[in-house]
Image (cartoon, rainbow, N blue to C red; front, top):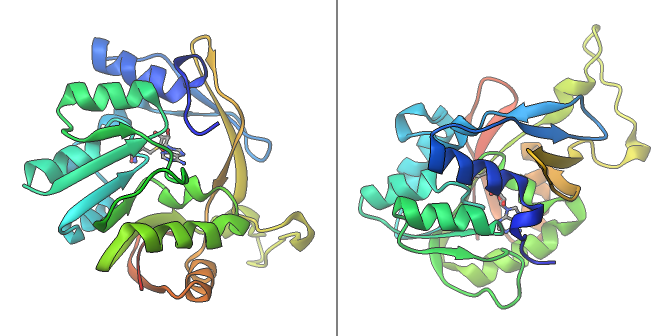
Length: 240
Ligand code: SAH
């Protein structure tokens, strides 16, 4: 299935509630690898001043026609639109797309990045809030870069943030206990729940910069480390 419906879109339900009522219930996150967690829904509505430095840096680097992939509540799209950039926001969540339109995102569409029907040409492709997540699995990176080739104008670039999850496997003596037979350590699964709306389990990729650079090069892309965050997180710029 390429897009969600309101009955299996917990994050969209949370975003819609917060937009309508100024508050939301708990957006719960489950994973086979981690303890139960929650996403603070308020933070999905962050203003540019409330954004982490990596995201503010990405927004400063955005130029030309921008594609905001997995735009959520539209926080990045709105900031760029206010700065006069032409932005297209896509998301697989119908409820989020509805909220974006109501908040004033001029061009918000219910589209899956990987949908073959989705075409367009952009100078900047934004993928933020662990933007590599949408790729899902390492094995999907070649397909992702193929799609990027179709969507990028000459000279265009992808601005993506991610994290190296190796710290989760670090022992007290500084060594790492990563079981290579388990596949790449940044491949995780999540499932979300909001009130009585339960989503399906989905794959989410965290990727370290070296692995990203390796796969980028295999597809003819260069990866640059723009900025590192405080906790194994970073912003990368990818271009042909
Ligand atoms: N970028 C936003 C939201 C991040 S959450 C922010 O920083 O606040 C990730 C978003 O990506 C969700 O809204 C989810 O619905 C969307 N998404 C997941 N897979 C997608 C895909 N294949 N194509 C487009 N959007 C996707």
